[in-house]
Image (tube, rainbow, N blue to C red; front, side, top):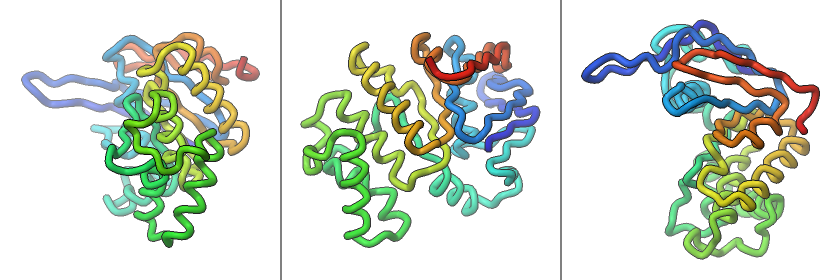
Length: 228
């Protein structure tokens, strides 16, 4: 499903910073994987490269057997649109749009009809337990509810890959646990491949596999028979 071969990512500034240093990694279809490590270890950089939000300095990344480095920008946009759902720590919801409108946005970009987008948005908001909040604005929701809307938006095209960057990092412990339960439930229902950056040990240990990064390199790769 996802494969990286000797991936290097450098950032130029006053001095060159090597955020990833020769990372090779394979993630199989349907795996739920946590990505851990200290701040600055390269976790979010790795997520952004897999999500085609950035390009590696060298090395190869492939998704479903297609090498990303060989794709034009328009093709990368299609990969991102059709295959990848993003869940962010700070929700990134548009404040002037209702829950339904926020979830509908990716579908409008795909050219879906108004009726189709409303039906899918309603279905997804029901799925994450917010069927009664369709017309509410983000400011009218709790943090946990906003993250549920963000998850529904990420799932709008039922992408085979979900990338989550600290999805519980901006929530209290109890709400974060609820969101984790939701993500695990959706993983079982949809059999999506999930890669999740987290600093929370309990969340990391709930995944099938935990990959540890330090100084831009993989220093640990622990597999479990099943999520606990």
